[in-house]
Length: 490
Image 1: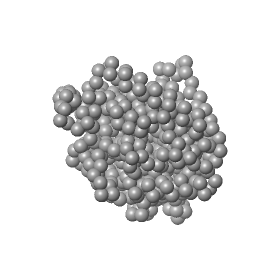
Image 2 (image 1 turned 90 degrees about the vertical axis):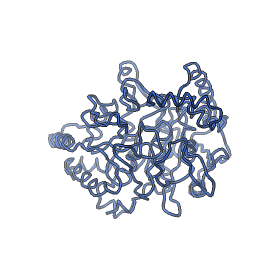
Image 3 (image 1 turned 30 degrees about the horizontal axis):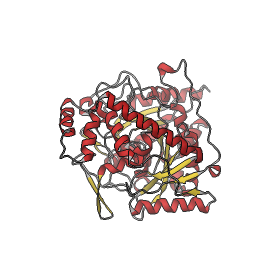
Image 4 (image 1 turned 135 degrees about the vertical axis):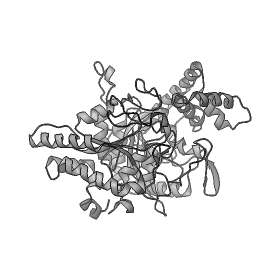
């Protein structure tokens, strides 16, 4: 981040720095909230990231926070900090839609469990960020709120499904945000907009209150996680520590004690899987990632570029994506499910489309058998992480791409380096690690020659979240971390 921007634009400072200023009474929560609201008013016509605001409730919360501080009362780890929440997470009293017209005017009666934790920590929730319908795309666009633009390139998307969150953070419109990630929905937006995102190990953050279908609220989706997005890795860990822990109905008997990092960053055993012929990475992305790994090696980090797990790469297509399709099937309408059943039986359809259709309508027995394959792959990954501590990998095979509104995840294409590729390849490098429940932290690795951000995944063993965050923090320092998009610098 440029020092000039950091010095005069509060919204571009880290959450930890803003919390320090609040604690030392350099600024009040009410004043900080006003700053974010004013920035949103100025940039919303260009970005369209924060799509629902609740200023009255936020002002009351901010005022109460300031009063507690003046009385020297303990107000929590996020005391007075304004932040937003992805619109796939229920927030009591604020319209929460999941991006679906069926819930266009839905106002939850209860908070998602992570939102309760955020409130208890003293945060000021002032808005909801944009997403695709039921979080089902690598863009942030829906019939209710329209399309979110990437602050680095307005004719491109910010990724999805937590694209409103990443665009808001990159633009300095919010201090922190929480997204959801089933196929890369925290990691992809971080990559496309040049911010940081953490996909926790599956099961360490409660998903109760995830709006992925109309009758949401009481259960958790397979593969999916809730995870923080921020401008710095320190801020990721700050928010992660607030929201992690057992779901409420297990909290009387369970405690979450994550292991510490396996060592300091330079002590960690590092492998790099920067490309694969099953999902080749574009020249633009490959160049940035190769330069990043070379920089690590020049800084004294030993990186094994040939080490691979025993898991076949293309299992992500037959196992990972199938499990993700099954997990997202509650969001399908009856008409959509009927059409998918027909498609699954159509031998003339493409293998990808048939996989999606058959997975969305599979029997419980078939799901259990697929889960056995997943469990075997999880063991193979555990063996890999006996020899290595982190694995570096691409987030997506391309940087930010132009908006696409026709078709869907499985019917669109992208032309990259002169080759037409399936749009669904966008989630291959993220699904590869998500369906086996591994943690992954994304930080900016650099920028392409035409100014688009490129992120890198730091993947670790199950429950090794501290280790991935530790190494990501090192990469942030080495490679420069977040930069301010020109549109957000004034």
